[in-house]
Image 1 (cartoon, one colour):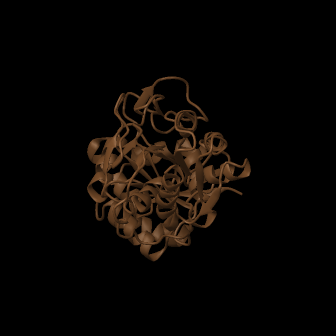
Image 2 (cartoon, rainbow, N blue to C red):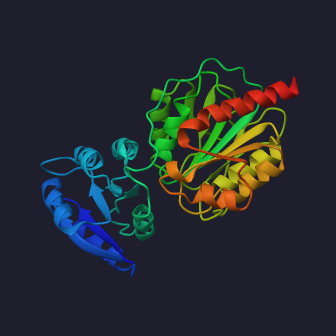
Image 3 (cartoon, helix red, strand yellow):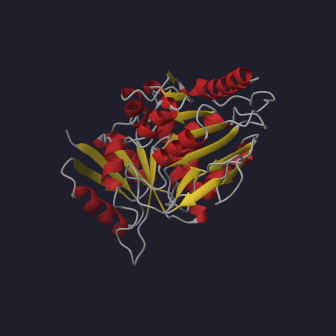
Length: 343
């Protein structure tokens, strides 16, 4: 069955380009285009699309305001099409927090296909995403003080991960266990994402840099782009960033991160796999569980896309499946239980 798409962008050239890219996929039908949110509102009523691609800067009403109305009045899958700049990253991250399923970068003049190679796949994944009806509890206050024991928390996420990570990390106390994260995200987004998390979370959240010591009370986000994040061996764990081929179709890869934690932290770790399309992280989470780590998968009802957690569960990598709003407490409880066992 075809995915019906409405394209919303104020540029006729961009509308034509997006239409051409999507029409290459036989499973996608572009049912219409709109130049601004007012036109889009009428088109949604008339055409009933499965997915909307939405620009940010438009006349009459900007994309964020229109997205807020969509999510409040008629929730449906939305893929933001944004300029991949620092300012564009901030706006796009806000859109993902509000409920947009994904964000794709607009191509630049000298690289017409940049950012669009996966557009069709992302639109099809968005069509299958849970929007509006899934478990989306409000973020609660951070838990009280925690006494870390040197263990490591490793988290992997993709589509829907911005909202999921916010839900989890805003529950973490200031002195949380050392936490490393790989979230599939464009290179220009991860620094802004780390800064955004840092502003609203009790622990310090930073974009990981090569050689940085992995310390309690800090959260390290893998930089997007062309390097993998891993945890080094030895008495004092450090972030290591390396080139190398994509793993499970991604760089940075959740599998690379999880395998390094399995090898270098063993049972003194907690692995968490969150919402996302594909299977990146499934094999790595299984390696963590086999090394004695506690492993948690986000449950289907609370996922935007139940891909990565499903694959991990199918091969035995998930010890427990939990709804999103219970995962932060489960992570902290597992760390505290490991501390008591070691004492």
